[in-house]
Image 1 (cartoon, one colour):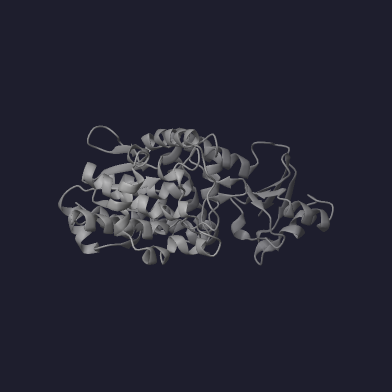
Image 2 (cartoon, rainbow, N blue to C red):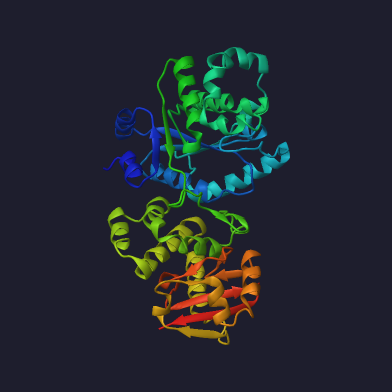
Length: 407
């Protein structure tokens, strides 16, 4: 049987890990209990969380036991990692509401039947701590100098790190210690921006329990240009269908950059690596097939097969223009787009706008959408790869459609 550590590594999940060979051997020998924490800062999980959920599913499918830790306690403080400003403080009622929504979402992805997985809220042990007792037993193991050198605090030091947030690392470390004691949880995993916090828990277990544990972080889901994936004009790409529809979710992944297709197929689907390799051997318009499979498979995991089929059909209908037989159409030769055509030229040539100045205003205000992707750059260029099934659907405002066909 293949080792799930190798699976995670081959698929590109792993960023950093302590004692790699030891952890790999430990996973090969017996099931390991591991956890990932999720602070309840919003009503829904998003695409960034989905990468971690996929990793948990890989682990559970290989026989290991996930602990999903809801941050009902830590969300009261707020994680400063990767933030230049203090996070918005939520009320206890808001946090518990969000945590309940998280719980409902996780039940779609993991098997929580007895012995398979555990879902727990750190409010259970953090909210009633005796502060002085906590400082004496736990705080004494932390060096302030070392904490201030951690990546999770660096971005905040110039803007002003509050003492409230400064406690976050210690609280997360204590979570690991508590889960180690309660569930024999020996591995903490999370996004790579959590490396400093995860290491703090790993070291606390060693100091307090004189025992070993492991830390592992995942690559953050970014584009080939280093920009976080999952951000849209309307906000984050949520896993809740009421906040981001299955169609929007499908379309976002259908429109990923060519350079990101193979990576996202490995991270966001369960397709075998050899199949992914075959799909991604092609270039240009031929890569659209791989994008469609990526969008369908990921949407199926998040929203179910029926929703994925509906989203796929809706996308094809929109792209082909079948959803409205009377959509105005302009035809071009595909060669006209060999060197690319800038968005303002296309809009004026197709008489979608009356002038370049009108086109410039619409683009800058977010009023132009191509294949369901909002365009805000007036220098954006349409190329041969922009077309799906020789069709490009342009939307002006909310209701005006125009189809570009190539032959």
